[in-house]
Image (cartoon, rainbow, N blue to C red):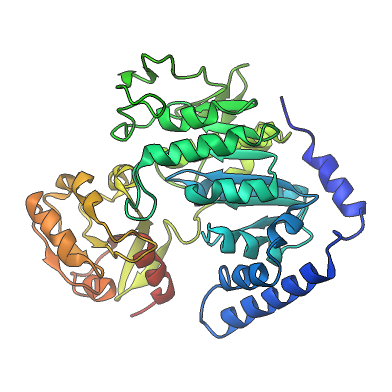
Length: 425
């Protein structure tokens, strides 16, 4: 059942007086916006963190205050947060202003900064790092949480994936009024979402099961049989309310939503299906939501075509084994590939995940290992029998290739560095 009509929420937001904030919160918001503006103008950053950090320092309850009287949707999971949140933002934009952390700053500072930037927007669509969902949700009291998937990611920062599932399950059970839209093909995501009194289940397929071999609740082996899965403790795949069927999203009543996406790959079709399901829950017509998704050609610079080192380049982001398995099939056949890997705090300094990426599929094409951790990557490529050269600077790596287009795949901080260097000759 839909949560209500966003159109009514929009009309109420347009006719209601300005959101009532305490003098302390107003000062915090004003100074945070000023700091973010200075950061952007001076080129120090996008303002997606510093503004939130200042606001929180001046008013520890700023997140709770800024969340009042909004329809808030949180989006979390290991992969697809930024894309799915951007899709939902695009869907809701015709109904009124939307506060969104579209730059991917998904820890509390970034969430606060997004709300500070649009203090009177009636809607907020916010991606949230899995480790911070409980903290953010307790303060914002969202209408809906979209839980995409859970897999291994940044072991030194995030921790073991089943501990993430337990924390999310506790967060969901502590907010009985919050609906949850969750992937039912992922045993860990489903286990967390089963704590909700109002789950909506979405089946999008997917081939990565390496992190869901054991039950998140009892630790016994999960038995997989095609899309179905079950554990001896009784945990089993819920019946889906929405299914990704080729290039369509189909609900349990047979309603069909065409997904005419400009974003490539199965993973983006899965993200779109999650977005359509969440939009329907919020009261948006699913077909109208699908039509809005067809207008998106890139998300936060992902899949963009640009010029680097004198070459036409397509830039892609991949951060962990599950993400790499979705990204590698998207690479243009025969094109040279530059892989840029860093190991900063935001990436996770532990790069053991490289050994779970099937780099063997790159055999037979020119490959360059780049980034601050290019030596680690070169070792992995050597063991995968992938001939390669090493050049730590990814732009110089591209420039050293023969004329023609290049596929450049980077992990998180390497990707962000490349965004600032786009257009280099």
